[in-house]
Length: 138
Image (cartoon, rainbow, N blue to C red):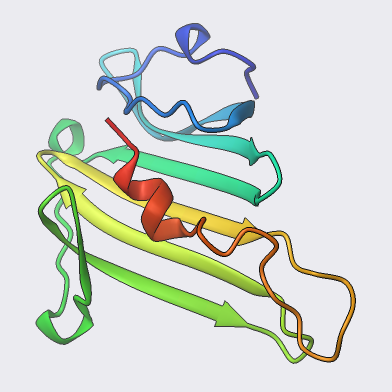
């Protein structure tokens, strides 16, 4: 685990994200030419929840990713994307959005903070979602 992305040698330029506080970074994928082909960054989005951003350099490994046309239900940066929300019996949710841009595969996972009172849990910050956070990446 790292605290700073500059400490990690990557085969790609990582996306920029400035809306949260970076908690940690982990190397992912494989090593090609002395550089990692992926990374997982963990962020705290103040007053909204926690986020993980996984980036994988498909170009460095010759990898491919296919999306079924029926699964594509949104777009990120003009690219086809798959967005999903998982819920448990207590009303807690985890949101995921997955897309490919250029030679990189992205998976953004967001665990929103939920209200503690009431019969039905709701997001504390309803305007923040995996989709909205994905749109902020540059």
